[in-house]
Image 1 (cartoon, rainbow, N blue to C red):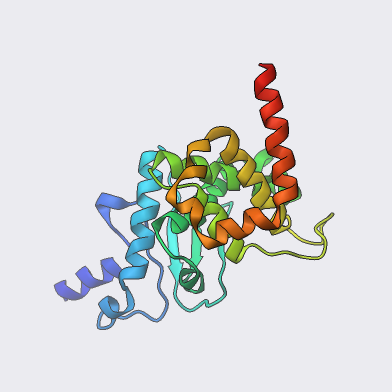
Image 2 (cartoon, one colour; image 1 turned 60 degrees about the vertical axis):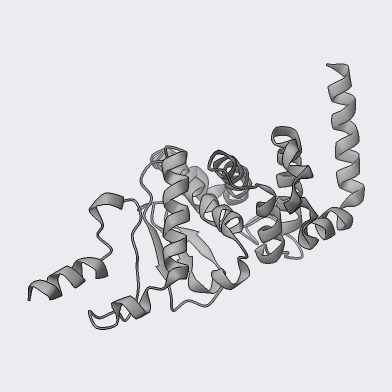
Length: 229
C-alpha cells in the first residue's frame, strides 16, 4: 500500500521541490507510469522550470497532454494552467525553440494575473496579446540564455497563415505578421543574435529572403533614426 501511494503521488504530478511544474498524463497507472513519462516530457518540464526561475515568474503549472497529436499549446487564463500537446514536440528541434513555445504560454499566464479587467481585455483583444506574448517570450528566452532567433524559426513552422485575420474571424494574427514583429524586436533589443550561428539556419534565412523588401525598409528606417540621435 505504501509503494502504491508513492507512485500515486507521482501520477498527480506532485513534486514538493518543483511545485511550479506539474505533469498531466492520461491513462496512467502505477504499473505504466515510467513508460508513459519519457525524456521529451521531462525536457518540457526542465525548460519551463528554467524560464520560470530565471525570470522570476509567478506560478504557472505546465501540463503535457500525450493523447493530443495536434501541434498546439494553450493557456487557461483563469487557472493559469499551460497545456503543451505532445503533437507539438516533433516540430521542435532544440531547447531554444521549446523555450519560445513555453515562454509564449508563460507570458499569457503572467498577463492573466492582472485580474478580471485584464481577463476581459485579453478575451476581446486576442491578437494584441498574441503579439505581446511573442515579444515577452523573446525577453524570457534571452534572460534564460536561449537564442531568440529560435522564436522565428519555430514560429515559421507552426504559426498559422489564414487568408485574413481581421475582426473575430481568427483569434491569432497572421503568422507572417508575427514573425516580422519578432524580427523587428530582436533587431532593436538584441541585435547581436542576428549574427549568431543560429541566424544561418535555413528556416531563418528563408524567412529573411521571403520578407526582404519589408525587412530592408525597416532596417533603413532604423539606421536613419539611429543616425539622427
